[in-house]
Image (cartoon, rainbow, N blue to C red; front, side, top):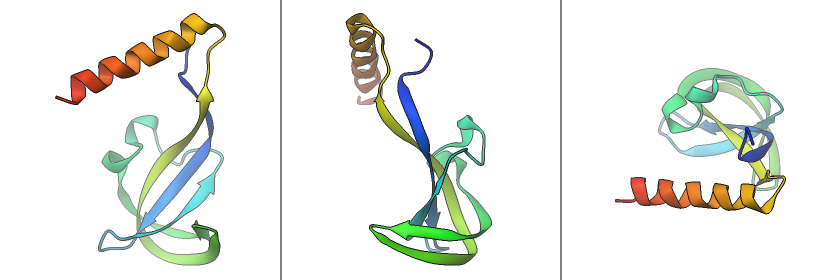
Length: 99
């Protein structure tokens, strides 16, 4: 098993200069390396696209603070043992980082 979750796509999260969430742009391929996903990969860039917040769509055309987030689907695993291993790894991560 090479990947824990099926990746369905990516969101480019948009924040204004004060850090307030504006919306997201759906992408099929990421615009940055996997190591730069999430908060640690935030950067300021020019975005001209159709964004979505809740169910409302609107056009954006400005500089935003952005972060790329993968959209994960179901757990991938051919057997029950694979799925149990995924659950065990997640519990170990929670116990390690939760303290």
